[in-house]
Image 1 (tube, one colour):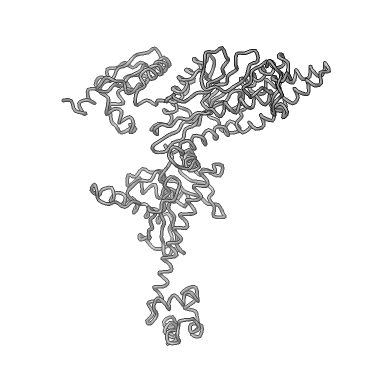
Image 2 (cartoon, one colour):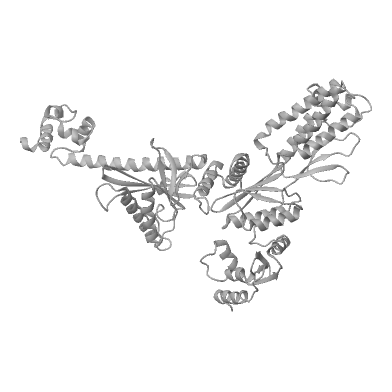
Length: 618
C-alpha cells in the first residue's frame, strides 16, 4: 500500500511533466472528487510547488495536499482564459478548499403593480404577474424603508384600497398630513397620479439628483404658465426629496454606482462585508462569515470572483480595503462581464475612505457578533494589524516595561492583552539580575531572554504535565514601553534564540501619553486610528502601572529590611517610623527627640535607632 511519502513523490513526478503554459488544475481526493480548483500562469511551476517542501505552505494548503490523490489539468491560451475557466469550474463543482459563498439569503424587491392605478410595494419574491420589479436586494429593511420614503415623497397610497373606487370615499389621515394624494377620494387626476408613480420609479432606480432636475424644470414651466398650485406642489416634493437626501448623507457616495468590500478577521474566522451603492445612495448590504484565510490577498481575489459570478449587476467601480491577488486580471474579467471598464480602487483619503472605514466597521461588527465579542475590540485589532503590517490581527499581545529608582531595585512587568482585554492570569514580574545600575536596553533584553527561556522549557514538558499559562505560548505581538533602542536590543535576543514574533515600541509624548509606535521603519502615528490608539494607550498605561507597583513593593520591602536590621526594631516599629518620616533617609537625619515623638516608639528604642545611624556619637 502506498504511503504518504510515496504519494507525494508520485504526484511531484507527474507535476514536473506539466507544460509551462497557462491553465487550470483540479486537485482530486481518493474518491475522484474535485477538492480544489486553481489557475496558473505556468502549470508546471504552480502545481509542482504543492508537492515540494511544506516550509512555505500555509496550514490550509498543507491540509489540502494531505487529501490529494491525483490531479488533472486543462491548458488555456492565456491566463485570462484560465481565470474564466476557473470561475466556471468552481461554480460547477463547489470544491471544498476553495472559498465558497453560500448564496442562500432571502432576496427582496420593489414591486410596481400592473394596474391602471399602479402601486409601489415591497415584495419578497418575483411573481410572473406582469408587474415591474426592481432588485434584488438582500436587506428587507432597506427595501421597506425606501418604498415607504418614495410613497411619502410622491404622495402615493400605502393602503390596500383599489382604484378607481366605485364610490368616492373620505380620505384618510395620510391625505391630511400631505403623505397621500387620496385617489380613493378623487383628489388627483389619473394623469397626475401616473406621473407621480413614474417619478417615484425614477427616484428608486436612479436616485434623487436626476428626479430633482426634471421636477425643477416642470416647476419652472408651471410657474411660467401661471399654474401656481402645481408649481407649489412640485416645490414641496423637491424639498421632501432634499430632506430625505440630507438624512442619507451618512451613507451616500459621490460616485453614483459602486460596491465596497472590506475584510475583518481573527485567528479562526473572517467576515467579508459588502456595501452596494446605486444612484449615489446605499441600497444594499451583505456579509459572509468564513474560516480565517491564510492569505488575505488571495481570499479577496476568490471572494470577489465568486461574488460577481452569482450577481447580475457589476458596478464600474469597486472599492476595496486592499488589492487582491491578480487584481489586474480580475478587473479584466469583471470588465468583460460588464461590457465596459471596471476599476478596483483602494482609497487613501476623503469621503471614499470614510465609506471604506464604514464597511470595515460593519465587517468587524458582524464578525464580533458571530464570536460573541464587541465590535470595537475586533476593529481595534484589525486597525493595529494594518498599521503594523501584520499578517492577521494580534489576538494575544504581550507588553513590557522597566521600573527603577536611579538604577536601584530594577524590575520589569509583563502584561498580556487577550482579544483586546487584560488577561491577568498570564501577567509576570521580573527582578533584573544581570547587572546593577541603570540600563533600560540591557534590562529589557534580559527580561525577554528569560521569558522565552521559560517558553522553551514549558513547551518541552511531556504531554499531560501542567504548564505555566503565561509562558507556554508565543504572543502574536510584543509591545515595549520604550523607543527604538529597546526594540533593537530585544530583536537581537529573539533572533539569536530563533523566536519569530513582531516587536514594536510604544512612544510617549512630553505629557507621558502615547504618541506613536516605533519599529524598524521609524515612528508610526496612531492618533488618527481611534480604536487602535485606545487599545495601545490602555496597554501602555496598564504595563506602566503593573511595573511601577512591583518596583514600589520591592523598594518598600528593601527599606523595611534596613530598619529591621536594628536590634530591638521589629516590623511594627519599622512601619511606624516609615509612616511618620516617609523614608529611611529622614529617619537617619532625625534627632533623638523626634524619634521619641513617634507613636509606638519608646525612648529606649529611639536611642537604639539614633545610635545605629550615628555610631560616631556613641
